[in-house]
Image (cartoon, rainbow, N blue to C red; front, side, top):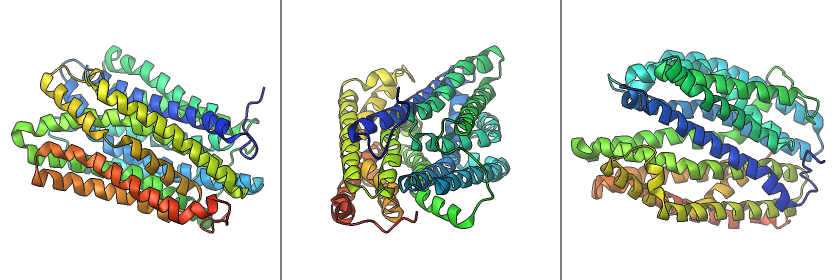
Length: 457
C-alpha cells in the first residue's frame, strides 16, 4: 500500500484532498480541545468565572508565542519543498536542520523574555486585581513549556512537506487527546485549578513534540532531521517567507485587544462587560471556521512550492483551483450553519438569555462575508508558497488595517455593537483586493507564460 504522496505526478485533486483534509481536521481538533479546555476552567467551583477570565487574558500572549513556530515552520517548509521539487535533497536537508536550530534558539530566548515581562503583558492585556493571579499562574507554566509548543508546531510542517499529511495530523491528535484526558485529572482530581490546566497543556505539547522529533528522525522520512549551526543567509530566507503568516497570527492579538477596548469604552458600565463576553464567544466560533480553512490552505503550500521548484505552473494552477473550491464549499456550509443553528454553540458557554441573544446575533454578523474570505485565504497562502512574501504580507496587512480602523470607527458614529460588523467589512474588501492582485500579478505565471523570480532556491 502506498504510504506517501508524489507531489510531482499524483493527480492534483486527490493530492489536495489527501494533504489538506488531514490539516483541516487537525486544525479543527486543535480549536476544539482549546474550547474544551476553557469549559473545564469555567466549571472550576467558586473561582471558575475569574479563572476563565484569567485564561482569556493569556490568549493573545499564547497566540504571539505560537506565531514564532509558524514563522519558522512555514518559512522553512516552503523553501524545503522548493528544494525537493528541484531535486536538491542535500539543500532540503540543510533547510530542515537550520529550521530546527532556529526553533531551539527562539524557544530559549522567548522563554526567558516572556518570564521577565509576563507581568507587564498581563496587565496591559486587561488583567485585573482579581484575575491577575489566575492569569499569572497559567502564563508562567505555559511559558516554561515554550520549547515543546514551538518545536511541535514548527517541525510538524516538515512532515507534511515530505508527503505524510496523516502523520502531521497525528501530531495534533496526540496533543488533543492527552490534553483533554489530563485536564480533569489535574484541575479537579489533583485540585490544581487553572494551574492544572496549564500543566495538562504543557504535557500535551511535550507529547506532540516527542512524536514529531521521533517521526522526523525515523528511517521512513525521505529527508531525516539533523542539526547545524544556524546559517545567517538561510535564516534570513526562512524568516522572509514566514514573515507574512507570522504577522497574520501576531496581529490577531492586537485586534482582539482593540476590539475589547472599544467595546468596553463605548459600551460603558451598562454594556461593556456583556459585549466583551459575547465577543469572546463569537471569536471562539470564528476559530471553527478560520482554523480549518487555514489548515486547507496551509496544507496545500508544500504541494504548490514543490511544483514551483519543478517549474510546473499547470499543476500549481490546478492546485489553487481545487483548494479554492474546497474552501468555498466549507465556508458555504458554515455560513448556512451560522444562520440556522448558532444558538447551540452559544449554549456551551452560557445560559444567560442576554448573553445568549447577543452572541447569536454577533455570530450572524461576523459570518456575513465568510464565503468571500475564502479567496483571501487561498490567494495569500498561495503567494507565500510561491515565495511572493511582499505581496502576501501587503494583502494581510491591508485586511488587518481595514479591520482595525472599522473596529474603532463604527462605534464612534453608531452604537458600540456595530464594531462586530468590522469583520465582514474587512473580509469583503480583502477578498476584492486579493482577487485583483491574483488576476493582474501572478496569473501570468500560472498560465505557463513565465517563471517567478521572487524566491531563491
